[in-house]
Amino acid sequence: MRDGQIVPETAGLSLGNSGVKLEATFLYADLADSTELAIYDQEIGAEVYKSYLLGTTRIIKDHGGQVRSFDGDRVMGVFIGDTKNSNAAKTALKINYFFTYILQPKFLAYYTRLNQFKFAQSVGIDTGYIVSGL
Image 1: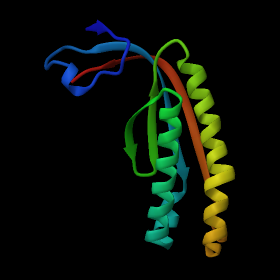
Image 2: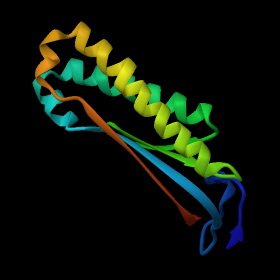
Image 3: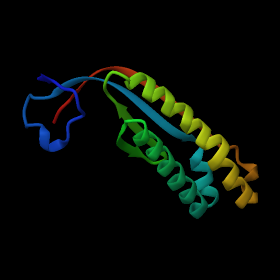
Image 4: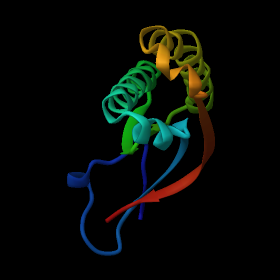
C-alpha cells in the first residue's frame, strides 16, 4: 500500500493486494422520500432527480470535489487536500441553498399538483483515512 494525494483512477491501481491510502472528506447529498414522487409521476420524478443530481454535481466540482458515485437520487463527492473539510462544508451549504431556494420553488411553481409532496433533502459529511484499491 502506498500513500496518495489524489483519488486514483482504476488505471492507476494494480491487481492484487495493492491500494492507495489517503485522507479524504466525503459528502453525500440525497433527496428524501423521492420514491413516492417517482410512484406518483415517473416523468416528473425523473426531471427532479436529474435536476438535483446535475445541480449537486456542479456544486461539488466547483468546490474542488470529485464525484465518485451516484445511487438513484444520491450523489457522493470526495474532497482531498488541505482545505477538504472547509470545501465540503461550503459545498453542503450551497447544495442546501440550491435545493431550498432554486430547485424546490421552481418545481413547485411549475408543477402545482406537486404541492402535496414534502420536498426534502439532506447532506452528510464525514472525514478520515481510506484505502482505495482493486
